[in-house]
Length: 231
Ligand code: C5P
Image 1 (cartoon, rainbow, N blue to C red):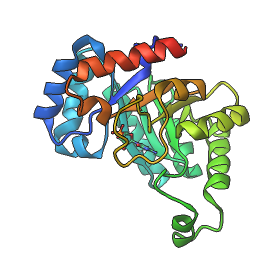
Image 2: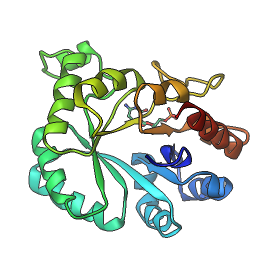
Image 3: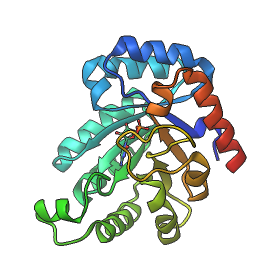
Image 4: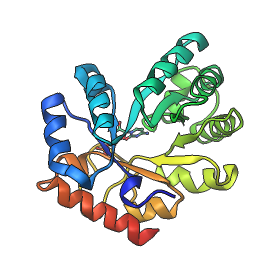
């Protein structure tokens, strides 16, 4: 199991390189793992990913890939060559099979996104599904496990039942984490770091409670201390 500090992933949901660079500089050795998503990736963030890795940080590239197998496979090979640690793929069997095959022999771990947490049963019906959220999450998580995906992105409340169903050998990465007393923002179902670790999360993704804190480094240290106490 990684150290408490290495289990915190700070989401760099920031408009550009200047802001990202300033935050990484400010956090220094306090943070070791960063998540880069659409916003930063499409604003010069892929070169920034390489510089983070060059500086000894680990990177979770949250690109939520989904395409034909050949395209997913080639994309995953390129991400693996960047030296990225985690990459997200939507939990469709073709995409997952291609991702698992393409990351073989590299240090990259591929994480399945089962059902986006902004979707409820009505949204799924609108998109043409007759399955509800809970059943679809359970089905896709099991498929991700059976197809050899390395882990899942899941909410803290999904973590306990999924851990029971899937056993210990998948990594659970949970967003929606809010230290006590911090703003929820648009997250509806949140858990404290203590609750998320207790539910079986391996890694916690935290964005705004760090990026919008008056003292981001102190915010990181408080979360790391909470992870250590809960472990
Ligand atoms: O600022 P906050 O802590 O809410 O950021 C959480 C991060 O995790 C964001 O980058 C968000 O896109 C991501 N995420 C999420 N819920 C998911 C999957 C990813 O909040 N189900």
